[in-house]
Length: 168
Ligand SMILES: [Zn+2]
Image 1 (cartoon, rainbow, N blue to C red):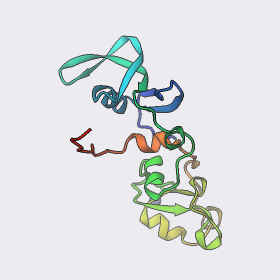
Image 2: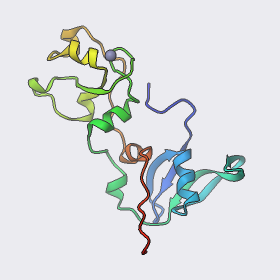
Image 3: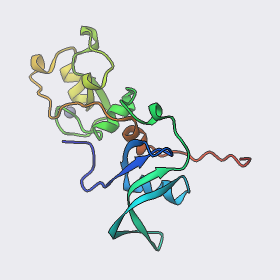
Image 4: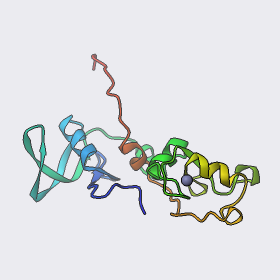
């Protein structure tokens, strides 16, 4: 199971230099295009996006107009608790319920690190039940395998507050 919601459409993103950066969701891609931060490099010849009463080309590939430092956007995301919850869609790795905490698969007390592959979203009851045990010891098998997300994915859905800087 992946964290992408069913039917989520993914659009390829290029840097200003045409270097591939990764992918983002259609909604985010449209927001970038409509706000003038990106242009559509390749559009679907058939489908159109309906947005704000208008019809727009359906982007398959967009290109950012401003160069972003590739390491910031591309490559493995930096580990964070919120990133783990986002990667796992707030789904508990043990019971498939709603998760608001993260669990260290190999507990921290046993040397488990704050790393993508060692952490997963978990609900409070499962987290408490597992305690300082491995999934095997606790008899709590993982329902999915943790993965290392790309930076662009972790930053893609974040509701970014636009910086209100008047002087450009
Ligand atoms: Zn749970």
